[in-house]
Length: 303
Image (cartoon, rainbow, N blue to C red; front, side, top):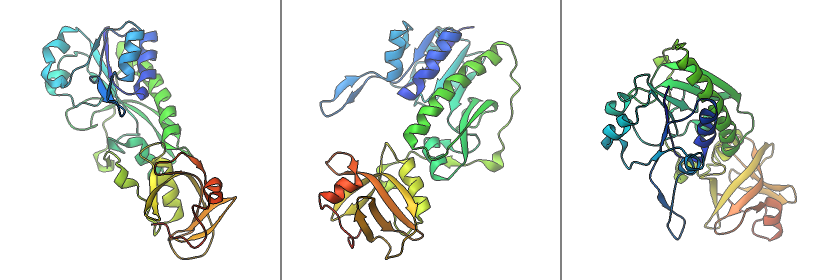
C-alpha cells in the first residue's frame, strides 16, 4: 500500500519517521519554503528537511487545492496528515482510494480547530491525546479510527506538544496497520459534545489579574513557549514564563512582595508567585534576579 504523508512543523516529524520506518512513505507533501528571521532567509519546513534526509520525494505546494492532478499522479492509496496547515478540498480527498486520515492533537470532538493543545491546558483538562480520524470537508468532523490519551498534569504547551508529537507517531503507525488489515471500525463523533478552538494570538495572552490565580497559571502554561502570557509593568511588556498559585492578601494586580522567592501578585482569587520571566527586549531570567536588579518592588502595579 502506497502511503503519502502531509505535514509541516517539527511536531509532525516523529510521525513521518515512524511511518517510513514501519511501512514506507511514497511521497511527502508540505508547505513551501518561507522567509524566516530578521534576514528573511528562505527556510524549508522541518518535514521537508526530514523527507530529504530519508530520500523521500517532496511536493511543497502553495495551494494544494490547485494541484489535484499532481497529487493523483502520486498513486497513493492513503494520505496521512499531521499539522499540514492547508485545507483539503474534495478533489484532494478523492485522490486516495483508502482515505485521508488526520492525526489531531485532542480527544475529539473536543477542541476541533487550530490550538487543541493550548486549549486543553487552559481549560484545565486532566487528559488530552491524539485522535486518528477520517478527514471530511467539515473541520475535524470525521469518524474516529483510534484514540491515544495522555495526562496534561502541570505541563507547559511546549512540554505537552512534545509528548503528543511522540504519541502521534505511535498513533500513525497503529492506524495505518489497522487500515492495511481492513480493521477500520469507525466511531462517529458526538456532535453534542463538540467544542472549537481558534489560533492563539499574543493579544489573547494578556493576563487579567481579576481572574483567579489558578486560571492565570493555566494561561501561563498554555502560552509557554509561545506566544507567552504577559502583563504590563511601568509601561513595558513583562512576559511570564513560570508561576504557581499561593495564598496572600492585597489589592488585585498589586505586587505583595518581591524577594528571593519571586514576585507575588494578588489576583481576583488567590495570588500568583512568579518565578521566571522575560522582560521585553531582554533575556529570560529568574524573578529573583529581576528583583535584585531593582526592576520591581512591593507596591508596584501589574496590569
